[in-house]
Amino acid sequence: MAKDINQDKFTDETQLKLQIFAECFREWIPVFIHDLYTKGVFIFDFFAGTGKDPDGNYGSPLILLNEAKGENCKYCNVVKKNNKKIYFVFNEKIESKQNELKQNIEEYLETCKKQNNCGENCIYQYRCDQKEFKDALQDELLEKYLHEKDYAKFALLDQYGFSQVDEQVFSKLISSPKTDFIFFISSSFINRFKELPQTKRYIDTNKIQFDEERPMDCHRLITDYYRNLIPEDKEYYLHHFTIKKGANYWGLIFGTSHSFGMEKFLRVCWNNDPLSGESNFNINNDYSEDSLFYDKNNTVKKQSIKNEIKDKILSSEITDNITGFKFTLKNGCLPELFTEVVKELEKENIIKRTGELNYSSTQIHRVDKYDISLVGKI
Image 1 (tube, rainbow, N blue to C red):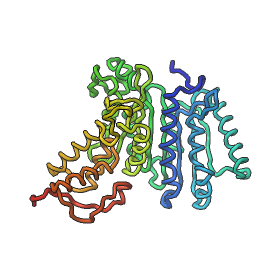
Image 2 (cartoon, rainbow, N blue to C red):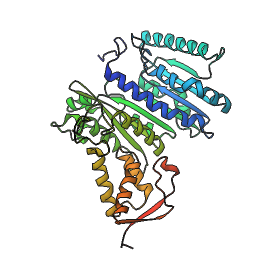
Image 3 (cartoon, one colour):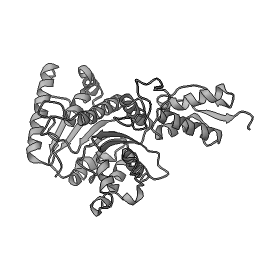
């Protein structure tokens, strides 16, 4: 039976996971609150727990509520002004935990209203369900809005183990417009029990080439497994973050159909891991910060992706900045890394740029396109 993380104080690793949840949602929510083309926002927390640990540290439900109002409730006024619908669905299948969750949410909202003079009514609506995940995923509300382009959806799947987000669930999430998700998965357990029928029932481990000499790569490889489930003609972004606890490796996987969503998540990851943007440990054996050779701007990950970008430019596989930005994002690095390579090649007089010349490297969906060609090549 899976351990109930709400019974004891959250471990450092759980706190990090929750911190990334919070930072990810903090980046996500204002985009759609301010977007005039988004009628409403739905937030689904499918494995909500009780909302707190015994020391009062917030779990995912209270984190989501807290981040949704913004600092000093700055988003509340925007929601009122734009007459948006903000709705939370918290699901916890264990009745005792669900009851505790309801109490913790009510206490949080009452305190929030008193502290911010909100009156009797909170602008955010919520409900607490007590369902098995498969039933929660087929919920009438979810089915109604999941495929609506006018509504933004954020799905948090903090599952125990790995059995819930199978190929069918993954395909459902990536096919839904304006829907971003982040899920937690026990990567080491998939690696350890990869030959068992119970594992293969949910994940086809025959398609994953685990390296027993590098167990720390197991979460990367599992993310690649999901990445290969994305149709070739679909533009979609996945990124991962590995969390090591003892000898085990767990991980988060974030998915979005929009480059801006991936930019924001990558910033969260690189803020938490300036070496590789993907782990709570030195996954690539970079020089440590106290080393003479430490250089956060030239890590193993960054240098590897810079080399790939350079090769693709020189082979004319990348011939414009937008293509280069998207390649960089899909390889887990921020777009400015591509611009660094462009500047280097320009300085060496290897390439020339034509079109709307600029060095903009953020919000790439709004950046003017320019073309890249090799000097001396027509």
